[in-house]
Length: 165
Image 1 (cartoon, rainbow, N blue to C red):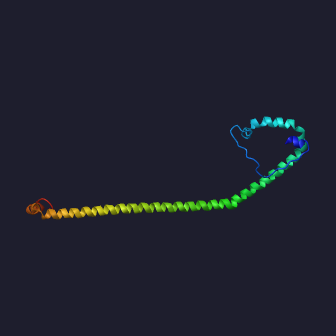
Image 2 (cartoon, one colour):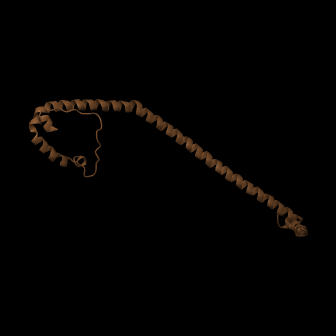
Image 3 (cartoon, one colour):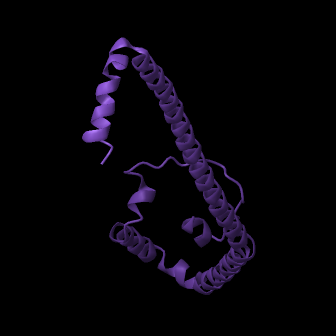
């Protein structure tokens, strides 16, 4: 590219993808991210094309400044969009999430209460069955011959040694 510029030719940037570059660990684009690895080839390039760089330095600086200004405006636009659109949407989403979490907690509590109520109902039903069984057993005991025969002894016990005092 530099030789083309040095020979007076001009190029154009085409704003479309014309090929895809597969990057691997050993790819030049990754290696060049290391400042130490990047600096040596850049120094060679600058030394080799020193005259072209000096001749077009002002144009390059102006173009870089324009690009920096353009990028700065884009960053400002993105920041404005973030503040006016994304932040309020994020705030609403967080509020909705908090409301959903509160609702979920209420549902969990309600479910736990319903489960406890069901457990208590089962326990109550079991106690009622046991009560019926015990009443039936007590009734059968009171109708038994041994109960009737021991009735005078229970009365004497109640009077002298038990519940009569």
